[in-house]
Image 1 (cartoon, rainbow, N blue to C red):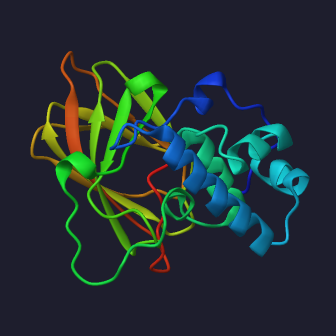
Image 2: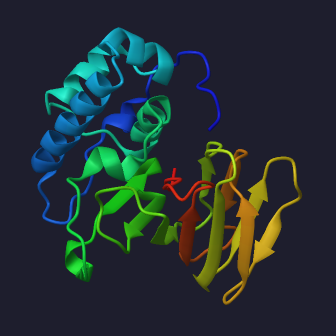
Length: 217
């Protein structure tokens, strides 16, 4: 996992509410707050210490823990990275074992960049998964940047409609059209860009190096 950079202030957009499946961000805020508080205490960290590690201010962390604010995936990614856990472990209660059906209208949907990038989890959010599959949507002409994932993490992307350019580190852009697929190491910064005038959709598979979730952000 890449080391957390020097402290930076979160952008205003980082505190936009998640568009929960039931349209009730307050419920999600409470879940995130409870999970964050338990994980922080488990790691023996004060709010100040976690703030220093994550680059998120103590005040913001306090608002999240009390359920007053529901951060976007960008902000949760920084907190999860500091705690060395997955984003799903912050967002949901542990899921039950056995066969689980995730109805389309009840799937967890997370957005960033004011809707420019949308990911729909095709699995129940809860305990970290060894493999996570998302349906992602990228708006026309939109570019979404991702921080480095844990060492050994990989992403596999399959284009459903439209086209995307994938840039990993300093590599040249890889242009993917409908039906094309790419597998790459996600432990370096990378970004997706939709060069077209139409929305692009893809399946994104995320895996970690040690069988743990590498999160979508």
